[in-house]
Length: 150
Image 1 (cartoon, one colour):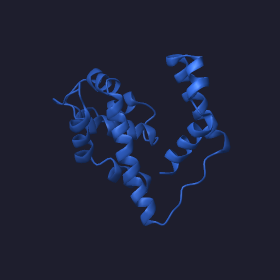
Image 2: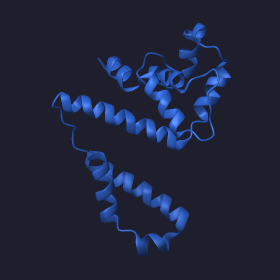
Image 3: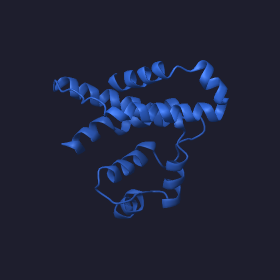
Image 4: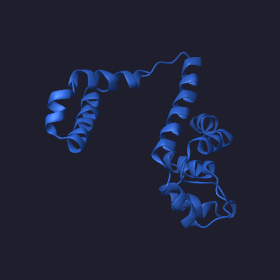
């Protein structure tokens, strides 16, 4: 069932269109973004223990070297990954809605952990004083919690 849901959520035509829409530096020649996503999803789903094992098991499928696959995977721009995550979440949320299913509540410490990491990044980038003067930890936690409910 999980594989079927992932195949629907990560439809190659949709994934490649998303890549073409959002990629700024990367491009498509012989290796499609959807092929790299499919390879990674097989590792995440536990079908193969690593990207290399998945590549080797399906060697006849690839018209490019293993290095090219790794280069494409390692060079994915953050906003392309974010767009893929948003699209996948929306697709799976529609399935959950159809099943009348609800997401579980967040673990109590999850929001605090994410908020702490966000604050650490802001402190590193802008300085401790900016965080103390301009960032509300209450509203930050509220925003993070709201993003997970959407």
